[in-house]
Image 1 (cartoon, rainbow, N blue to C red):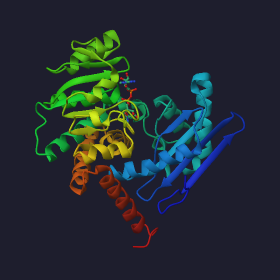
Image 2: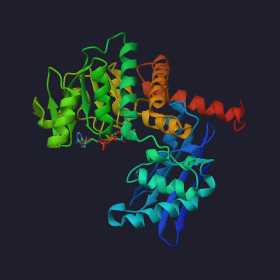
Image 3: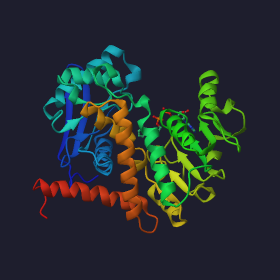
Length: 368
Ligand code: NAD
């Protein structure tokens, strides 16, 4: 990966702590709009290249969400499953100490793979300020993802797209892949706004009910039986969900679930990307060429980063939901108005880059 382009990277800090053996990296791509914001992942095979790619993606995501944040990301090379909780804490604290000089001025952390609110509390404690990170426990000013900001944002983005097409969400059919944090809240709000969710999947398979599934029933069944497939309806393979005759398809669990092998079997007119990278750009383009409205991941699932911003402002959950709604509504509209030849991702990237460029010019980092 190229380390330099007109936007970044500003800093790539590789650290090693002799005492704990902690090895980590913090990549700060661009801070023109504000401190680089991005999570810390703790995985045994994390690489500097991977962290850099994620940091760059955060620059576009935060700019497209219209937040005063730049893009950054961190990785700690360790396997938390193979260590005691005390060792994991030592690693997190050692990482915090090593990157302290850039936090929170140039970098604000957050949770990512294998990093939870517990480690965020340790990180903030080690840096010495709650401003060091988001995703902290609520007793120290955190706004947990369990509130459902991301799923809510996905539902808002979908609602805007439906309206933009001159249609009504009422009675439109929806299929949702994944019934975790994002999928459950996307279903809850779409149902509240009149859509008919006819299919939901989890790791055990898909449940399909033409007359519509009910959010409250699925929550109860998932809690009791451990899977949505125990609900009333036709039980299908997990992969079948993508090919069902629905108006709106929400991939909300795993990457690359829409691929060359199934893209031509998709019936939905709107694909609302709740998960990260559910389809490669070439695959999205196949859908776009057919006139499908693809709501790109970094636009549709930005509710989480917007909630993080609200946390840094010290706002409560009521204000957070309002800010998520306003920002996602506005950003989705701006993207759809800019879109040519159905290429929503291209339009969103252009908007994000323009916003970053504008901030860089204001700061005198780029000539007009
Ligand atoms: P989660 O762990 O809460 O839920 C994942 C769900 O996917 C579970 O219900 C699981 O059963 C289901 N699943 C696993 N394998 C499956 C399969 N083969 N078929 C169908 N379902 C399967 O995760 P989450 O937080 O809801 O995140 C889901 C996606 O959204 C991820 O790609 C994540 O990166 C992305 N995302 C999440 C957030 C957030 O705030 N949680 C923010 C942005 C993006």
